[in-house]
Amino acid sequence: MKRMILIVTGFAVVLTGAYCSTYLFAQGGGAPATPQVQGTKVAVVNIGLVFNKYKRAIQVKNELEATLEQPRKEAKKLMGEMEAWDKEIRENLKLPKADKDAYADRIRKNKLKLDEMNYDISKLLGKRSEDNLVLLYKEVNECIKRVAETYGFQVVLGYGDPMDKELLSLFPNINRKMQAMDAGSTVPLYVHGSVDLSSVIADTLNHWHDEHMRKQGLQPAGGTLPK
Image (cartoon, rainbow, N blue to C red; front, side):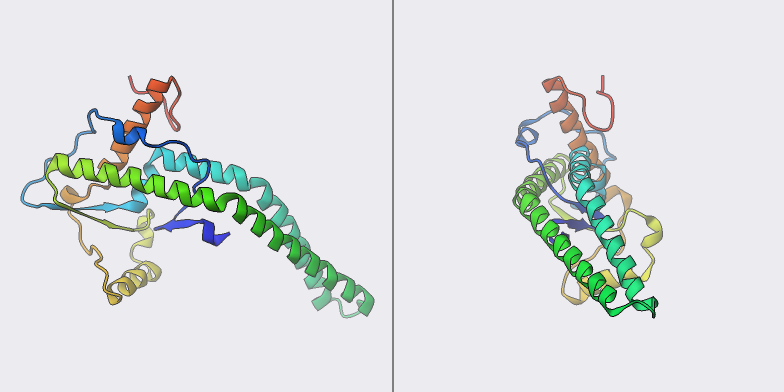
């Protein structure tokens, strides 16, 4: 199931239940205010933060959780049985050979069931995940383009940092950045708040999302309609 998941700096997104997203591109209207930027034409966006704050991405994540809830329960049950049988085989020295063989056969059958479940879920979500990932990327990129043009930025660079600040200084995150730089990529090592558009992008996307929901007479996910 890992191949169905897009990891964006700790934010796992599996994109399901596609619906038309082109409304974002047609929306005008005011973007939330941001501090005026002077003396630079380059900005950055933490894509992980955007995905974590964007209401539609949260909604998609919740849809994933709902879709996978029952399969996860079944998988947990199968794995629990496998662990119990394996422990019995390893630790019960008086267990007859016939019982050991029976437990081993049950373990094999459970493993086959898990493999089948994984295949079925991949088949169910795979194509929709790819389609919706493309749509979500286009929405975010269009928003970045509009905000950048509004505030006079000529270049916007995307990067990824964990949402948990305590993880920023730990080895896995540092090693990830070092490996990226070793491979020739550019990694922001210091970002002044005046050129970080991450929150502005997320807020603007949510503004467009709520405006669309308002026009449809629907309640936006994660909050009440703005007045």
